[in-house]
Amino acid sequence: GDSCEVEYAASFDGVLTSPPYPGLIDYHEQHQYAYELLGLDDRRELELGAAQAGTSRAAIAAYSEGVARALANAASALVPGAPVLVVVNDRRNLYPEILDAARLRLDARLRRHVNRRTGRRAGEYFEDVLVAYAA
Image (tube, rainbow, N blue to C red):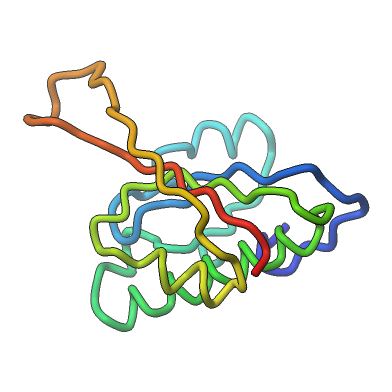
C-alpha cells in the first residue's frame, strides 16, 4: 500500500525506516526482478524521491512533503512514547523540516560510518540515525 495512506490494523512499539534518497536511485529498475518474481504491480508513480523526478526545487519539495506524510501516518499507529528511527544521509538537511511537518520531535542524531563493501565510491561515507518522538 501507499505508506502515506495505509491504515494500520494494530499499534506498534516503534518504526524503523530508511527512506529513499531523492533523485538518486531508480528503485523500481533496480528491483524489477523482485516485482516479476513476486507478481507485484509496478507502482513507480507512488515512489517518493524517484530518480526520474530529479532534484529540482519542486522535486525536493514533493519528496519532503511525501516523506512527512508517510512518517506522520506511521507515527499515528505507535503506542505513546514509541520512537521513530530514520536512517538517512541528510546532505541536503531536509529532515529537520520533514520531522517538523510530520509532528515529530528530533531527540537524537546518531552518526554512523558506513563500511564500503565495494570500491565504487571514494572517501568516507556516513549516515545518521534520527531518533524522533511524537511532538
